[in-house]
Amino acid sequence: MQIERTLTQLQVKPSSPQRARELGQLGYMQWLGGLPGHADYNAEAARAYLMAVDFIETDPTIAVFCELLCASMRQPLQPLDLALPKPARRGGARARRSCL
Image (tube, rainbow, N blue to C red):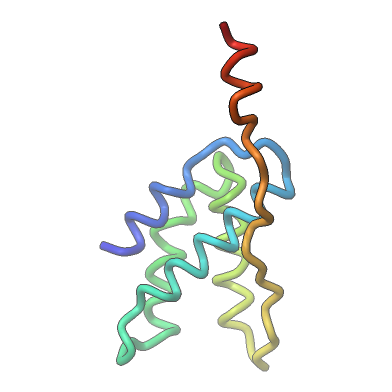
């Protein structure tokens, strides 16, 4: 259930490749945080990858998510470069007024 929600949330059109990377990383962290403590990580990561692989070509955020899944399963283990998205203004009152 968690992976379906994460994939649905990742199916957006990002404004830039950097934003796609940020959202893909955020989706990976959300999926990882939703795993039960007793879960077999490799089995869950493989299951998530199999569910997401069909969307790699059409959704850049899901492509980033899949890259992170693959990198996390490689041996020997290496630290992943993860970061939360940078806060950004969306326009506020000025953007609302310009649409009128």
